[in-house]
Image (cartoon, rainbow, N blue to C red; front, side, top):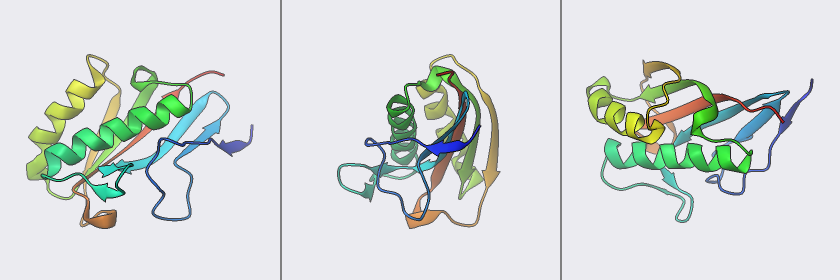
Length: 128
């Protein structure tokens, strides 16, 4: 089963040489999404709360482009520049998933692209 990039017109522009989403059989893997507003190309104003909301909206939009939804997500990884932001991120993340609880890892990192405070990547099971 070859891995194939999926067209993602809803994704913010890629900040590097990668695909926002790739399908391998029944699995979708999404590149990490930061809180970039796809209309402006800029990070959401206001800090980690707004960036988390936008990152989750971006994840949902890319999944939608792939014919999937947040309910199909099996695993996430959340990257935070400051683990002190964990409670705020966690509350917004939980609201976005609305009761669905995929497996998750949360990792502290030194920095993220474009000065982002949070990044979310996902794996989703979405049979064709």
